[in-house]
Image (cartoon, rainbow, N blue to C red):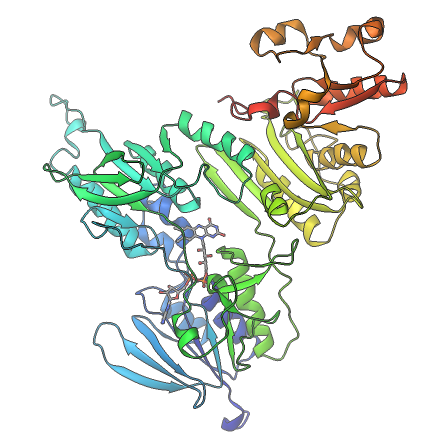
Length: 571
Ligand SMILES: Cc1cc2nc3c(=O)[nH]c(=O)nc-3n(C[C@H](O)[C@H](O)[C@H](O)COP(=O)(O)OP(=O)(O)OC[C@H]3O[C@@H](n4cnc5c(N)ncnc54)[C@H](O)[C@@H]3O)c2cc1C
């Protein structure tokens, strides 16, 4: 047994994603360390990602959300866990931390050799008039989800179950929910409230949902969720809340509208919890998160910080960024433990790899969006749109995936991707995420060898397909253009006339691909010809033919599908 003096004491603040990962990993690396994990809430290591689904009843039992209990940590990892215990002050000079029992108010001080902060990012709660009215909730903790479920069940108490009795048929009253905020948590909760029979309105200040997506891709999501019952009120911020005479709520917006509600969910985003860190004099970064180095060390070498509370480097742009995601929080907790135990682990930076499921579809993305590249003034990039099938079209169940892929024109470096569809979105973005982290180019995507059988993919997987289309552009085989530049050229539509009956492009000359070589005399030789089809594939074939025949030709990227981008998913 090592002497007592060699025993390191590590105090971890926050017992969920980052904190719990750190505690468990540290124990696996250092059997001798004294580990104290304090959590101000009643639970450690709970699945906050599952909360919207508990609200919706998909995850029926609250206990299913409790991934590991305080006892698991005590018994399996010999970690001293204190729940309902809030860290209220750090004294870096004396290396002590003051803790307060939330229930009794009793305070006590603990010394530490190393401190790890993983306090997360609380939900934004602006001081709007009426925000504390009953019936207004947030979805962040297990007690929050419980309160929502109780409110919903109490709301229909006198009718609940009656409709099941024979001989007494009654309709449950349609209840109205207003969700404020069109990010992950807002949309997930809105979907779950639709499943519970609510008439749901989602109010969002921006002119799109899911802010990390480019607006053209967000339109696909918006169209899809509207068709599944969520009413979107975009471009409108919430101004306040009032109680109506019948006890229900009125949500007042900045544009002067009033939305009636029986329940309101606030999902206005999160803000890093830096209160303890600030008071302890730790450096706070330009994005408002705790500044850490690659080893998760703060400006004080004895204090580490991980998870939603820190800001980290964006892997693609190099910018500092705030990423509130469970994957990075877990990995950072593990890295901090490694470093505390003397290992040389480093966080590689974030790519923002994300996914959200909505009514059976998924939207996912990784790396830089076009709006980020534009904000940074980048001009050396190109974008493509493609709509490959999720698996071989001849095998039942194939669904289109709408993809947008961004890459550097000068060297083909892959920069980011966004995908939306009802099948196979997750694995494509996951494959692209690892490619991005390895610094892949579009040529690497062309050559990626991915698993294939007809029910899973295609011999040319959407990932390969993206690489091939992008590489065709960079190699000069397929010059492209986009709709915003389409007015300057001669528009040639190579679709079949029957397709034009559904959607035509004003001003375009229609020569179906099969007739093109016989009707070359109808095409100008002195003007650039912009070629349109439905998704870009036939336009590419036409572009290749015309280029080789001496014409100036370009493919309109993504064809008519990328023109408005709303009705891409037809279900
Ligand atoms: C509803 C919801 C759904 C989500 N869905 C997803 C998803 O699908 N995918 C995904 O990647 N991410 C998702 N996230 C985000 C993910 O849960 C977070 O990124 C992750 O939990 C962050 O880990 P963390 O350790 O930094 O903070 P948290 O997991 O939030 O833990 C911080 C803990 O610290 C405690 N604490 C704070 N201050 C103190 C103090 N002074 N003393 C003691 N304890 C303190 C808090 O009570 C809290 O329990 C979701 C989050 C929510 C709320």
